[in-house]
Amino acid sequence: MGQEHDAPVLAVDIGGTKLAAALVDPEGRITHYDRIATPADPDPRVLWRTLESLLDKLLAEAGCPQPAGVGVGCGGPMRWPSGEVSPLNIPAWRDFPLRRRLRARHPDLPVRVHNDAICVAVGEHWRGAGRGYDNVLGMVVSTGVGGGLVLGGRLIDGASGNAGHIGHVVVDPQGPPCECGGRGCLEAVARGPGLVAWAQRQGWRPGQAGVSGVELAEDARLGHPVAGAALQRAGRALGVAIASAMHLCDLEVVAIGGGLAQCGPLLFDPLQEALREHARMEFARRVQVVPAALGQTAGLVGAAALILAGDRYWNAD
Image (tube, rainbow, N blue to C red; front, side):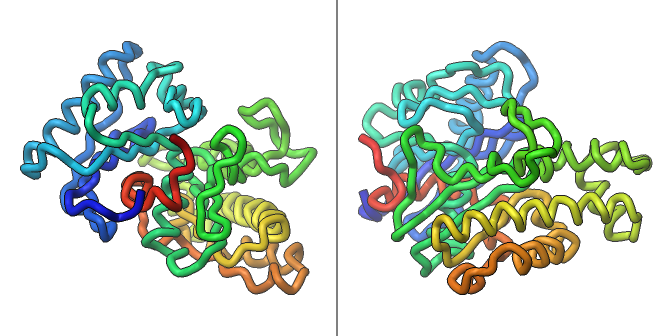
């Protein structure tokens, strides 16, 4: 389904720390936005009622009783396209029938649910750093590392909806264990909590603000050698993984979003250094690796595009 509605789409971004919702118009502009902290309650009904209240409030305040559809990005894993979700960072939901519940709320509307990192990639291709290119890898580097892949101008889902999951490309076979059960995955090296743990083992001691990737990045900016080395380590791992993706997929643009992408040269300089070492084929050297253009709204814009530009980004039912 292409852009054939005047009404906005209700877009939802479900994460471990926040639930966000927005109305997105057919041009990809967010017209109304709201968010709430993700409840820590282990009862799945509490989380669902919290989400329902957020959506009801947003639609009422916007005066939009009937959006054009509902697009959702949610942490994985999930069964796709049925939309039964088990987000690793939301223990309350295991095999939660998110798509079915949303369809029951909006029985006359299309409801589409995909991985949150894939929605970021879709948003960047549709209206962000990858706009105008046909072959784009979108990435999120934050508490985890995920991604989505657009080739030939269309989202590539793969057999189970997980194509583009660059977080589990192996960058160091002798590297740290990963939560997936493997070893040396990009996510194990470059995810924010992993970087913090590595830096602490090397002697970094956070100050008053607490232990977080934000403080680690701030200390790196202030010249702390261990904090700087942590970001150097993450950047090089990203460069190695991206070089492999470039050669495999013949990309034009790699757009990197998420909290760590805000570190600027502290992350991107070692990333580019690793690319110069490992991306040696001529076609790979032409690829642009850039920060995501849409910032924290990319996932919501991408979730809306599952409806508004479904001919390119939704390949099921």
